[in-house]
Length: 256
Image (cartoon, rainbow, N blue to C red; front, side):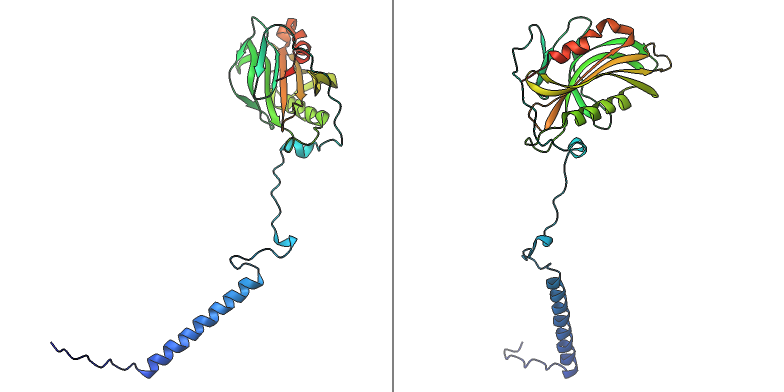
């Protein structure tokens, strides 16, 4: 083995020229890309230079807030008053409580969602009025909530919002075709809070179902949150002796 270093071989001039030309080409391509990115403002770390450079924020308004713009001013709130005596159903998530009734009414424990608005009814009472090919038919007193405003600063248009909820109830909860007779449609104070109440009788004819109409009450209550509380009460025509409950339970509502 030799201990003397060898002289390194010389590179062919043609090969050397090829490497030089290729290197210049790569640098030129890189400069073109950088110039193009700079023209579009897409270089890493670049900051927007004008308002047009910012992307518009995504509109995440709830459906009801879009359909029912906030009022210019809110109606004055009344005094809450003491809660009615007797047993109460308390819906902490919706922010309301209301009168509870004895037999045949039983506690409601499901999370029921129906309709386009998907109001979530989690608390309340019910009883089965009849069984038919479609399943069990119920009388119900149910409460839930629905997103109705952006944050909690805007004044809620109760009339517009309540009418949309009531229309969703009619369209989604009952056999079709059906007709509606409006019996009550007004703003009231419920437990010192503004509310809108709609009471209606919905007529229908479902094969195998004895009930041919139903008394329905819908109250939309402004509880001072982004979500409005909803109270839905229904009494089928087979049990008209309970019709009085529709108004009675509405008047018993208090904000918790």
